[in-house]
Image 1 (tube, rainbow, N blue to C red):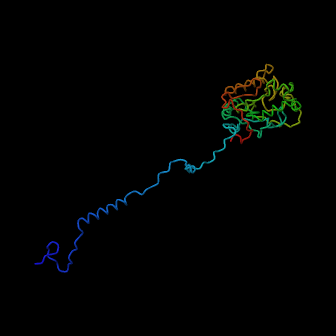
Image 2 (cartoon, rainbow, N blue to C red; image 1 turned 120 degrees about the vertical axis):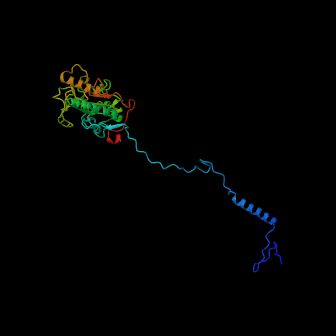
Image 3 (cartoon, rainbow, N blue to C red; image 1 turned 90 degrees about the vertical axis):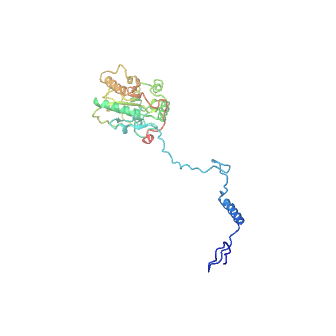
Length: 306
């Protein structure tokens, strides 16, 4: 009986004898080599050291912030409004935008015939209008916010003694040189803070007021109402901007209807938080004004309020 070459099993016909495998020592060596190769392949790839955040010696790091957009321009008079936008019922007769004033020409800074006020003062004035209408009157404003350049224009004018075109109406009994000393013109003025205004009462329905014509004959502001410029205001004892002691709110020479009208205006305004300047029946400041120490110079124009 023939034996097989490996295990003594008989060789099968047609089957080639099996090759002898590698020796155990060679197998171990091969496995160790393969393990070395695999270990080398599994190591992480070397990387450069991380760059510190922030600028380097080669220049600043690129910004990742979103591109900035231009902020809206801040209005020249923040917190101010056009009175007519808050209460269109209130009448306006902005004298310093016209030649009908004590200087006799439009005043610097009055680009448009508008009443500008801080919103706080305008809303308080709306409450006054409600009360006035309940009693058969409406308000009419002559001046509101007054820019610093306008005040400077007044001061410069007061220093020119030869310019007295409207003396016969506005300061008929007072020398122009006394306007500063007697407090009728001064700088700075509360008007430039935006919560002070000049106003009067008009009976409703309001009568039509004839326009002022430059060069027309002038009548003293202290004359009886029937003789003065035909303002559609109720009788207040003098005209507006009358530089005379008769315009003092409580002047004892003012009696009857004119005195009652002054007292009515003062009561309406005081109830809404306004304070009267006792030398001018028309002049009131809002007590709780937002800018008690700020004097603005932006022009009287809608563009100034944004």
